[in-house]
Amino acid sequence: MEFLSYGKQWIDEDDIKSVIDVLKSDYLTQGPYIKKMEDEICQITQAKYCVAVSNGTAALHLAVMALEIEKGSEGITSPITFVASANSMVYSEIIPVFADIDKKDYNISPSEIERKISKKTKLIIPVHFAGQPAKMKEIKEIANKNKLYIIEDAAHAIGSNYEDGTPVGNCNYSDMTVFSFHPVKTITCGEGGAITTNNKEIYDKLILLRTHGITKDFSKFKYENEINPWFYEMQLLGYNYRITDIQASLAVSQLRKLDRFKKRRREIVKKYNNAFKEIPYIVTPFERESLDSCFHLYVILIDFKQIGVSRKQIIELLKNKNIGCQVLYIPVHLQPYYQEKYNYKLGDYPCAENYYKHCLALPLYPKMTDSDVTYVIGNLVNIIHQ
Ligand SMILES: *Cc1c(COP(=O)(O)O)cnc(C)c1O
Image (tube, rainbow, N blue to C red):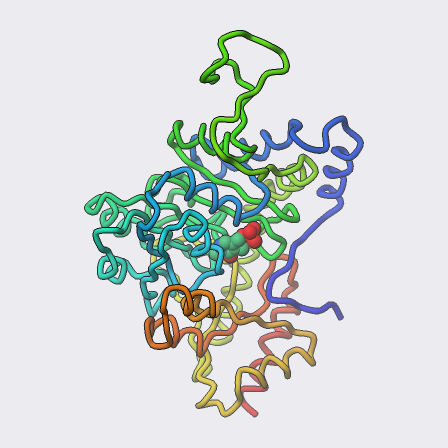
């Protein structure tokens, strides 16, 4: 049987055809599909502007850069995230400060954010962990009160809705929202990312930064007042973070399947929840009422001590049955780079560390069949009841 990994893409013939069409066309990069991808993301998120880039980390990097925050300032993010959320601040010499997670939904806790705000704080990067939106209404209020910027890391959360029923990425609660389209994420284009915003000034800056800080638009030239066909100006120090049309065509094809993928992801989550809710020593994911998450990960907490099997053993036993599990994430503040550079240590974020001790992500992706799900449940329950 096929190996059931914790997350996996679903590529069909129509996705393949859409990529082949680009390969046969005149443009492999900077062609029409990038705009189509951006339009599609605007439609899904209801944001005014979208800038597609080469990956989610590039999206975070440019988003932080576009805010032009003074070096030595502080930014607050969650310790339970992929390292890129915090790294994006380090690139701009902003000091990453973590705020502990909520015990229930594993997202950054608004009251912990408040505790970590200092005179130097300029930015909050909430991460919508596993696809469940963070408490954005509260976070926005805190940001307004303290004049802070917000960048949502929605790498897990395309297709999710906030408590008010509106789509993640609409930027009603933030300055920018960032997405990733890596193959383990909800939809994929190989490598890819995007930033949404409702702010025209930020949008213009992101467009420049994506391609070396260069513009060819005469109306935007600073020094040149003659129209010449070869002319361009480099106005900022940017990067080559462009996405190719090959990738963008795959993204367009995949984005159109988002509703279907979401429905299937939610069905699988429900099946898991029903199966595990009566099993002692397992905590199933908590979804806040009125949220409508497009689950990216299915993470349970297991009391390994009580069941008498270690996490390592469970992972190995399941692997022998062709089931892949994952531990997401090692708290970022415990990474050697963060401990050594910023003096973080074990004990700094007790909720995050306790979560890390007990978490296990089970396979969740839309292509899983009902019998795959039953198979995972059966094998895990067997181990626990041994
Ligand atoms: C995947 C991920 C990223 C980075 O995205 P890439 O496309 O892999 O660069 C950033 N933040 C979170 C929370 C992620 O899961």
